[in-house]
Length: 216
Image (cartoon, rainbow, N blue to C red):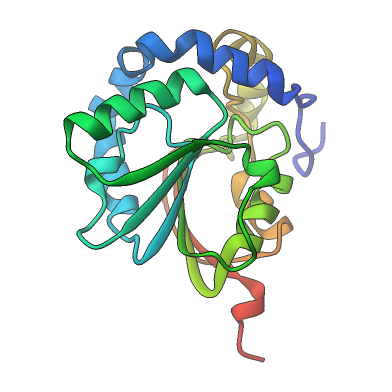
């Protein structure tokens, strides 16, 4: 088995979306252990870097909405209408001014260079074609903009990596995400330049920018 390729076939996006629709009523409860083990702290750190016109990919139940700094203009998308229903409720309860809409990151309904920041937290594990989605992110972020990601990735340890590869089909079928994604490599394959990575176990806090912003 090569460490340079994805170890499991991609699921159709429709199947992933259906899984999140099913999970939406209890998603926050399902994810609560990850929050306790540092998830909220990491999300707050990543989301706190947003500036200006910001697109959040995979807004989910809207847990990040209250974490944005003042003055940030947030547009949030998700493929799951069930998740969006909960995000809209959370926005109303928090009196948060956000634009929430159903959309797929693999085909974003926005013009080139539309956003100063693009954020995503634990999303690209569930995109059917993550490189295609990240290419769309590279397209809609402004030339001097930033992409801020929090993702879990395939362990670098060969034994743990092998275990994650074997568990991924079951986890993906039941819960939606694939737990063996190589997101750092996918970010670069999509035409983004990684400018900073904070690594902690399987977690990555990634700051990237479009390669077109690089000064030659």
